[in-house]
View 1: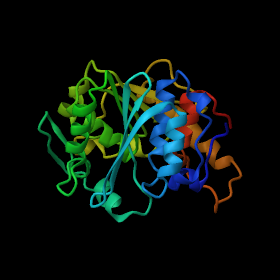
View 2: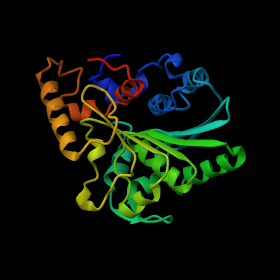
View 3: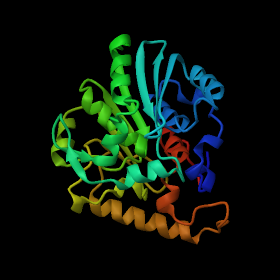
View 4: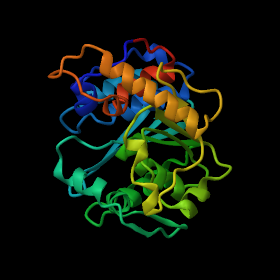
Length: 283
């Protein structure tokens, strides 16, 4: 599966078709990556298409949640084994509410410990239609034996807040910004966290550490060739890898209309996380 540097892959992931569900059999994290991509499908317009894709991935129960005021969207799923996955949609390109959410990075108190990004907290805990309360109610009704919180980009940040609320949940994120300060990140020490970072992805580098933000533990670094590092690389090794990736990207003959100009953006495309976690990326 070729690395996708197209603008559609980055800015309009909902235009890409679901991948072959057979690719994800027995691969929980890869399935989470695909769910994080499918979460960009709009409901209700794409609900029938989304239902079919989720059923093909083995989910027998599917519930959709949306807060139009905060533009927050999540899907809560249960598979045939009784496992639950809650996947949040990431930033919608060009949507003004999401832009405000992402830029509102003032640290504010988080009741469970530490401080978190104001925009992320507001989207998760909006007074208009409270996604936080709605999902808590869904979990109380279904009581799954296993819960995974997942998402890409802004969706990864919201999944992190949900996992903070539910300490038994596993957290699997893709291209996540930092969500809170060191005290908040420490809440995840010793927990099942897999935070996938694609080489040059610019979003994993915001908000700036100077503002007090720190990532959760559990880094899974994807190198410039799409391979997941066996252990967490040093900052120097990551810097060298990303520099080489950027240079090679700029040397490629890319169509400037169809493709994004910078690898730091292209690496953020959800489908490039899917192909890497599946281990089938080429190019």
